[in-house]
Image 1 (cartoon, rainbow, N blue to C red):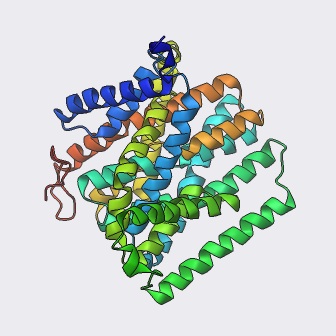
Image 2: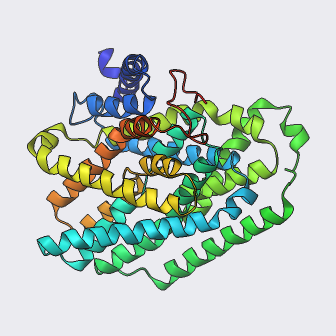
Image 3: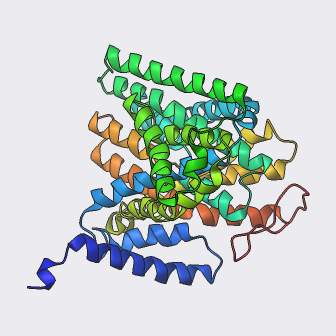
Length: 404
């Protein structure tokens, strides 16, 4: 009677916390990031594992909060002036990556006689990198404020922006065109963000209203920080844009107000929990039985994705860098397929552009690239550290700091 009264979600979160602590402690012995523990925990507890968590949508929804919080924190650490200076890296880098990815898929599609709408959509899918994984790796290594880290982040942010037209094109290819009101709403939202960024560049520093009163009240700080983060995310989502992009803009507004210290203290614990849940939701998508049955195809796809994405992004970064080793390292960071690709793949599946088998194959390939990414970055670092470079950090040590 007593056990039946226990909320299953409560026991699920306790199990999840226990498994994360267990796997995280084990992996830290081998100096591996917690990302791997989070994804592996999702595999263990999900419907394809021991089925300790049956409500995958709950974890996924809470994980989306993690993405929003993560981008908000990055915004607080980003100077709008410095970001504007890197607009060439962002725009050219993202567009070249998308164009090269579509061209690569077109070559493959020509061999297998794919329809052109499938070629375009799959090109979109592999062209996007993971903001969550890359930003976490840069934070762990202390490289997020380095020139390379800022270049990589600028490309990621541009990818977040161009996801909107990608989704519109995907819907068009599936025969579902957005309404005129939706297009107008997105244009208004985009113009509003640009206007706000221009204002921040001109103002440089702003003052938050009632800032002196807020700094003396910790409970009030928590709710104001919460509203600032999710309020901007809600606003951009209303205009049909990325919620994570709105959170990033909100973070840059806080940075300009020079109030990041108490915003950081108020939301830091929430960020750890919800970002962990985001990666757990990725792990829950990995169907081990499907992976075993199709391991050859998945392995070939993983190899093709990593080699092609790594090479494309290395060449892109080399256009803006004088050090090929830095470009190679940046290419490794951007080599995986990003979480926003799940959205494009789902849209393509529901619009019948790809089959159910192709959709499942795409989902597990994306999830596996996210799981493998830390190992790929570490492997790439070991290759290039054989060639000393003053600009390139050494391998990350056990505490997550970057030795120089």
